[in-house]
Image 1 (cartoon, rainbow, N blue to C red):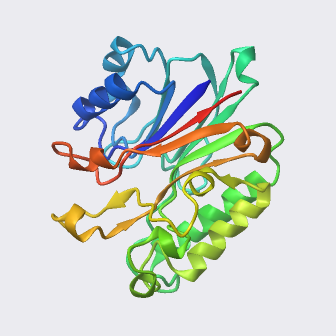
Image 2: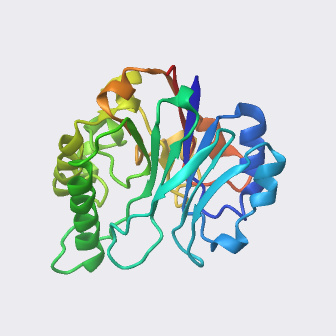
Amino acid sequence: MVSVTTWNINSVRLRMPLVEQFLTQHAPDVLCLQEIKCVEEQFPAKAFRDLGYDHIAIHGQKGYHGVATVSRLPFREISRYDWQDNGEARHIGVQLTDPAHQGMVIENVYVPAGGDVPDREVNAKFGQKLDFLERMARWADKIDQPTLIVGDFNIAPLESDVWSHKQLLKVVSHTPIEVEALQRFMDAHGWTDIGREHVPAPERYYSWWSYRNPNWQTNDKGRRLDHMWASPDLAKQATRHRILEEARNWERPSDHVPLTTEFEL
């Protein structure tokens, strides 16, 4: 069995106590973090090693973005793609090296948020997001090994992935043009959306609640921005998927919560 967690931590140094709490209580084999907001030299590697996560791959950036994958299982780093095409640290890929894990590849990605206006003519950030997804799709078209891609995709594609489909249709993260771009990425490899395999639509499923809404539980204006997608054969080996909503209520939390999938390889 291999368990993998994805979590946009929104500053790993600030929220290391929450990460320690999560790893102590839930102990996934692999943890993929997005938005670590630090360069590699500042990453709290010792704290992870003290918890038994000896294998660490970091693609960091000062103050912004950044991704890291830590693991109790041996892996090798295999890639750092610049799908943003401007040097931002938004991806890292690793491959598990124990033969028992069948060469499983774990891609950790942080897709750009895309700004506030869903029009690339007046909002360059939105255009960059769409181009990022297009580069991901071209990459996915060539995948030839069992792959899991996880992270903050910054898109809630389904009507039941947001608190109000009607009110969010023109809000970045749920616009038709973004959903179509994400669908092209899905079709490029035939990915399986593990979250929705285990929590079928139209069941409620959110992974993010804005800091702007202090009564997040009462109002429950969430969106499913975080995803775990697998190659078709790998997806068939996923046995359990869970969303730790309680983490949004921890002290000084991230606005995202952890998602975990277990695989029987």
